[in-house]
View (spheres, rainbow, N blue to C red):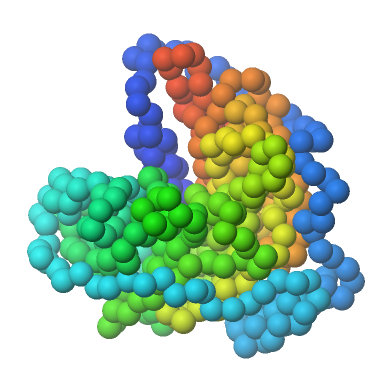
Length: 415
């Protein structure tokens, strides 16, 4: 599992490095690790009710977790219906996102993915990878990317391909064409692979897109592709309750607890949201969950309020990321948020997996100085209590560094 954590961290650092325009070649002496203080401030709107609790709700959430651990999916869904009635969460299918299968031109490309399956197309907008862990195809690498122009009659396409030799050669699994005018935003794609002990394997892909060639609404799309046996797929758009056309939903992140729950994982999705108000925006994160993801006809449960409250701000380019972890037998989701309201701010929050769409705990912001920070990502290596945050830090006008923070006790203390 430590190997898997290392692979995940390498991917995160690689993404961060690739997103920079220039790096300083100056060699620096790495400072010794030191404890990091977490501070709470009045930046968040503490009056907004983003947590919904009560004895009955907590009792139902405890029951749901017991059913999950026993593998009783039907009763999990039954309990969620009761929670919907009590909390205002909404469970429904996603809104149809029209896509068509593109005929394959080459079955295999014996080359590096950047030179082979990618370079044959124009306008690559984002890429994400994951690796199989169990079964006869364990170690198979999956990669998905979206490509296409920014306008015109040529549609965006999402391609899924795999490698069985460590990335030397790649095989196209499926390519899906977006409907006209729907365009994916740059670098807004994330994927998660879930694997059942019975051999079923599904890839979940979340991406941020805009309608009308980037001049319309900002939305979150999801593709679910069954990659074991006969291939099948579905595409849909997430639709939170109370959404209006002026809301911006973008930069999605997706994770599962499949590492600990092979037969009955849950899929967790988070995204950034901006809601226009007089004088600026109210911004934060929206979340959704799927309790039965081994299907191409999934039901999605949406939290009606934001994850940790909305913050008033002027337009800014902020990010969020999520990770599943387990500490002292408790299953949790951790969220990191960067550059919201203040370009140096990195804020963190957590919640139990059973409370993902009802309540959460805002832990505060890291007291790590006034340097600008950007694109914070978090990894846990699966079901471990060790968390690592990797982010860009502006050292000078011409130099960005990769900075990391870590916790070895489930987010309680950081270095």
